[in-house]
Amino acid sequence: QMGLGQMGGSQMGQMGGQMGGFGGLPGMGLPGGQQLNAGGQPGFGMPGQQFQGQASMGTPFQQSQAPEADERTLEDLACTVGPHREIWSVAKQIFRNVFQETLPWQPIPREQLSMTMESALQLIKSANAMTPQTAEECGLGKLTIQLFSFASIEEPQVLLQLFSGFEQLASPVLTMLLDMPWAALSQTGWPLLALLAQINQRKAQLGALNDERVDGLDSPIARQFQAQLMAALAARDGGAAQEAATAYLSTSPQSGSETALASLTALAAQALASPDPQERLQILDILQQALKQVVGSGPELDLALSTRWPLWGVLHVAMDAFG
Image (cartoon, rainbow, N blue to C red; front, top):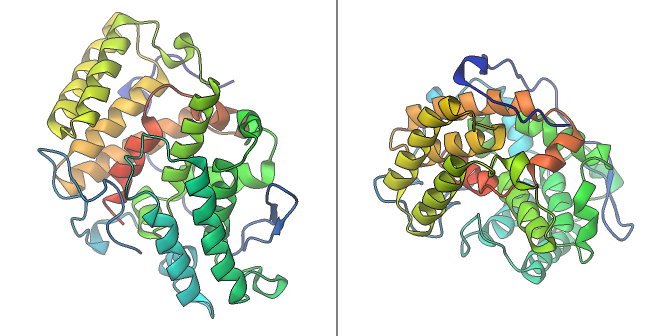
């Protein structure tokens, strides 16, 4: 079970994750039995808008500021190399466009996600870009298709223990979340965090979210923070979101109410609202280390994706500034 006890700043260590060789991803199956052999785009995040008190989410991010990552690995993950790179680039933009019109902590209709996936998949297949001969090409793009297929599945009960029961999916997703530097992951352009946010939303529609104790919402301080944060997000007020997050992180340890998922969300809100790219990067680094301490397996990821906190959508916007 996920470690959801108190989590303080002293527990957050130094980043040790390095990608290493990551060519093709393991072969994975789509719902309905369809087989999938798995081997930067600008302007994704808030739909044409930005938070008050926040630098533009499209602020250019200099490569020299990013955590070091192997250039060829980034090219492979972004699918900007290979014989079908142009097709994968078009498919990536199709995938990203579906998130432009909806705030990432709000649900997108299942039918819209499904149509988006089918549109891109038809394009990719028509170019023979997903055949046994291309098994090692664009693994992260194929993983994105896989996540789309589950986010839009007609029988969402599958999502309850999705990563617990599907190691071939859990392993590459956990690798991206825990071992890939987040600025580099964002630079690949694939909307993995946005899709995890939609899986969280589908679980909410099922009523399959964590109880208040797991999310720390049995505490009045946490409930107050959640209310303040949701109001700030609705108003697109980054300053209010940052103020609420800072207040929660400064008072919750003394009250004994601090839990991992609440604290992770507070850190994500601070990163989202920061007008300084370098500061945002530092907060995200701390957040990734904290996430490693509480999510290390498929069952733990399922639990984190069942949270009542807008963690995954907020994290997506904070990270996508570096895309």
